[in-house]
Each structure stands twice: as C-alpha cells, then as structure tokens.
Length: 276
Ligand SMILES: NC(=O)C1=CN([C@@H]2O[C@H](COP(=O)(O)OP(=O)(O)OC[C@H]3O[C@@H](n4cnc5c(N)ncnc54)[C@H](OP(=O)(O)O)[C@@H]3O)[C@@H](O)[C@H]2O)C=CC1
Ligand SMILES: O=C(O)[C@@H]1CCC=N1
Image (cartoon, rainbow, N blue to C red; front, side, top):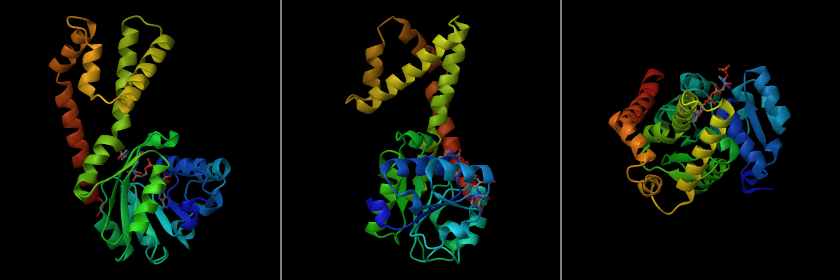
C-alpha cells in the first residue's frame, strides 16, 4: 500500500488529457487502481480509462466524489462552476479539493462548493504523462500540513513540484510551465519546416530536430551552468550559431516570448472573471 493509498480514495472529476496523465503517473507509482475513481461524461474516454488503468469510472461527478478523501477537479475552467455545484452537497466536507484548472481561483471554488473547503490549486503540464512534468502548487490557509503533503505526492507522480506562496502568481506558472510545452512543440514545428526548406529529407529533419531539443533540454536539467553559459559553448565567434542567434535576436525573439507569456498570464485572469 502506498502513502497515497493510505490517504483514502481519490476522485478525478473530468477524465480528459491532464487527468489521464496524472492517473497514468499514479498507477505507475504503484497506487491501487481500485482506489482511483473517475467521473467522465464521454463514454469512449471513460471506457478507455477503465481498460487502460483498471480505475473505477462513473458518468457523473457526484458518483465519483462520494466517499473520496481527495477530489481532483480536472475539468475546463468554463464548466468548473457547474461541476462545483454538482459536488457541493456530495464531496465529503473534509475532502482535500485539488483544482488543476487555469485561472479559476481558490476563492471561487470555495464559494461554489459552499465554503469552508481545503483547496490546493495545482498547475501541472502534459509531460507528466511520461514522468517529465513539473507542477506549481498553491494551498489555502485551510489546507493542513498532511493535506499539503498529500497534494504534493499526488502531483509528484508526474515530476517535481514547487510551492507558490502568492496565489496571484499561479497565472504566471500557468503561462510558463502549464502552457510551456506548446511553445517547445511550436519551436519543433518551425525548425522542422526550416530544415526541410534547406533541403533535408523529412525523416532526417525530424530526427535532428527532436533529438536536438531533447538533448538541449536534458543539458538544461542536468547541467550546473545556466542557459547563457550552455549557449555560449555552442556559439563559436563568427560561426554559424552566432549568425542564427543574431537573426533571432534582431527579429525580437525574447520580446515576442515575453509578450506571449504576458498574454497567457492575462488570459488566466480573464478565464477567472469570465466564468465567475
Ligand atoms: N492540457 C493541459 O496541458 C493542461 C490543462 N490544465 C487544466 O486541466 C483542466 C482540464 O484540461 P484538459 O484535460 O486539457 O481538458 P479535457 O477537455 O481533455 O478534459 C476535461 C474532461 O472533463 C469532462 N467533463 C466536462 N464536464 C464534466 C462533468 N460535469 N463531470 C465530469 N467530467 C466533465 C470533459 O468532457 P467534455 O469534453 O464532454 O466536456 C472532458 O472529457 C483544464 O481546467 C485546464 O486548464 C492544466 C494544466 C495543463
Ligand atoms: O491552454 C490551457 O488553457 C491549459 C492550461 C495550461 C495548459 N493548457
């Protein structure tokens, strides 16, 4: 029995992309599939979760949450209010509520659930599916030390976690690491297209691009040196890398990324306001 099993049943409300990543991580860690309950209205997704992981599946949030000691809210921000309404009288009053939704605040969730709840906001990302994710976590004052530990252990199934003290910064976490994998995939797409334009066959280009991003990412994680030092080692004075980096900088690469992350941060706040 893992520490998570001992903490009691866990219910996922929403069995989409992110829930699937987290459930996969928990099962790989050795958590008993029978203690994982999932509410998912889409028949095909529900059946696939039961078949792939052996978890207990339900069509409604109320059925999954009944008796759970941890409830993971893994639905879109746009339906969070309605889902909390479904759970208000059903989720045990002492259950730890963990929301992974972008933007939606702990105060909103607490209000929609009827008040007095222990709530953790978590922002994981899709690499959690292969144990390479990262998660920012925020806990309200009602969350006990044991519940904090339980939330961190749950998210650690997908990779390392970091606690954020100021909830307002969770929108920045979302913009940097929650959405971040998409920026890297966009870079991969752009490099692939550029490689092919230079005449490389698609298969060779794909291997070169993917392995370059994987290798550079591994160096970033493993190396003691920061990114500018790693970059300097690639960049021979007057060489090919310098020519490319100068072109990127002249085109506003850093400023564009800054605007993109600022816009994603704002979008989190908008999602909160628009779905209140
Ligand atoms: N994808 C990502 O990279 C990340 C997403 N998040 C957050 O995770 C949350 C889920 O995102 P994601 O997994 O991508 O979304 P998905 O749409 O893949 O998953 C959400 C699932 O919840 C289902 N659902 C809708 N209403 C209910 C209900 N009343 N009860 C139970 N299930 C319901 C949806 O069904 P239907 O399709 O029929 O509506 C859908 O299958 C979002 O809030 C998002 O902000 C956080 C970090 C990263
Ligand atoms: O795009 C989104 O809104 C969600 C949150 C972070 C990643 N996906």
